[in-house]
Image 1 (cartoon, helix red, strand yellow):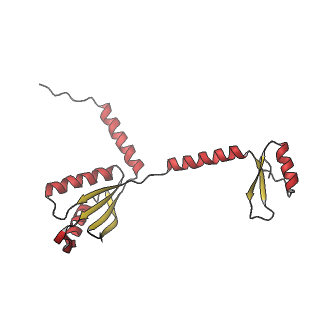
Image 2: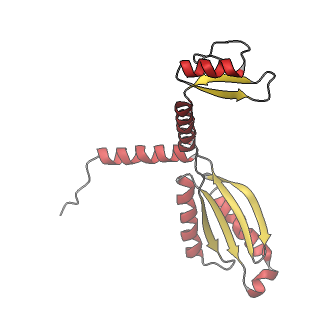
Image 3: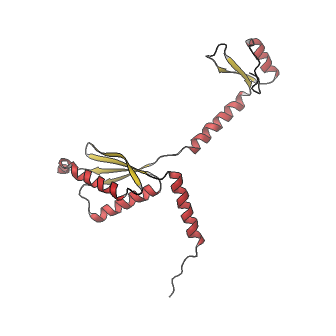
Length: 177
């Protein structure tokens, strides 16, 4: 193949190298398994640079999934539960996944249903923001459940930026004395 993608036809290696040298280009083997092997005249340095830039751009546009972790105990105080639930809500609104871990100690290990009920209650409390990605399962002394957000990370960021811009446009209220 020529430098502009046109077909040159079947050419000997010697002639192909001569054509590449005259055009001040490189002879690059594109398809080695084809019969006969397909080669192309191109600037190999430029080709490598462009392919590296495409790969870099693809990595940049790739979504990074972050998993936040919240740890609870089976016998948790109602206020502490509300605080932990608030953290889970905040993480889900930001578009992050949440790994909820219930840590069992001592005799608590003989009552895994307490942890299961607690995880189920948490899942029900945050169901409008997220869904249960992996259900509660016992892992040694811990019980683990993963909750994923309904919104994607990008949507959550855009919504947060819009809310911030809306707040920034309003005049801050000054308390009257």
